[in-house]
Amino acid sequence: MHQEIRQRICLLDYPPGMRLSEAALAEEFGTSRTPLRRVLARLEDEGLVLSHHGVGTLVTDADINALEQVYRLRVELTELTGRLDPVPPSDAFLVKIDGLVLRAAQIIKSGTAREFTQFDMDVFQTLLDLTSNAPLRQTLERLYFQTKRIWLRTAIEAQLDLEEEFRIFHHELEAIQLALLSGDLDAVARIQRAHVSMSFKRLQRQNASAQSGSLETDGANDC
Image 1 (cartoon, rainbow, N blue to C red):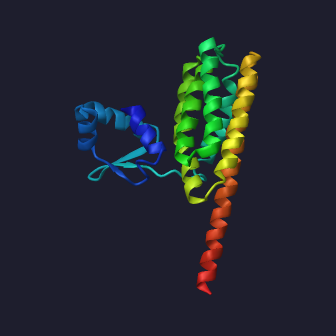
Image 2: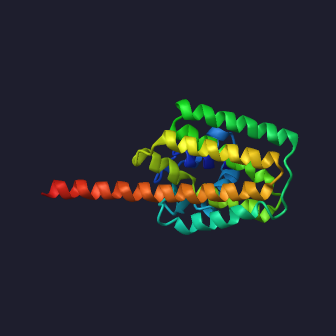
Image 3: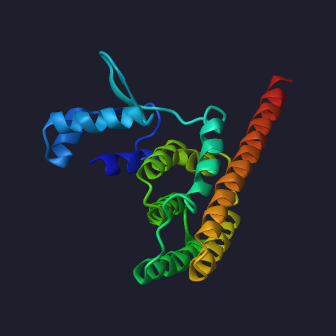
C-alpha cells in the first residue's frame, strides 16, 4: 500500500491538495483502516501528505524553492553510495542495467513525461541496491520521493524539452553501465551525483524562465 500510494503521489495521480479517502483506499486495497492509517502516517512523516483534524489527509504541495536544501543533501549523500558498504554488481544486476539502458533508448523515441518519471523511479530503486548501508538507503529513498514530483510538474507546466531530457539521462545510464562493467562503484556514485545536481539546475532554470514569462504576460495584460 505504501509504495503504491507513494507512487501515485509522485506521478501526480493524486495531485497536491487532493484529499485521500480512507474508506475508498481501504476498500480498494481490501484492508481495514488500521493498517491504512499506519501507511498514511508513514507518508505524512515522509512529507507527502498532511493530516488535518476535521478535514482528512491531504496530499502536500512540492515547491522547488522550498526543497532546495533537500536536493543539495541528495547530491552529497548520493556520492556516499560508492563508499559506504558498496555491493558489487552480480551478473543478474548487470542484465537488469542492460534492460534499463534499452528502455531509456525507447523512451527517447516515444516517451511521455509520466513514463519517464516512472522509469526514473525504477532506475533509482535499482541503483540503490549498490549499497547495503541501511541508514543511507532509507535516507536517500525518503529524500528522493520528497522531490520526485517536482520534475513531472515542471515538465508539464514549463514544457520541458522532453527529448533532450531523455537523451541526457540515456547517456548518463550508458556511463553508469560502463563504470559497472569496469567494477568502479565510486564512479557510478559520482555519475549519479552529477545527475541529481545537473537535473536540479535545469529545473531551477526552467522554473525561473516560466515565472519570468508569466510576469511578462501579466505586465502586458496590465497595460
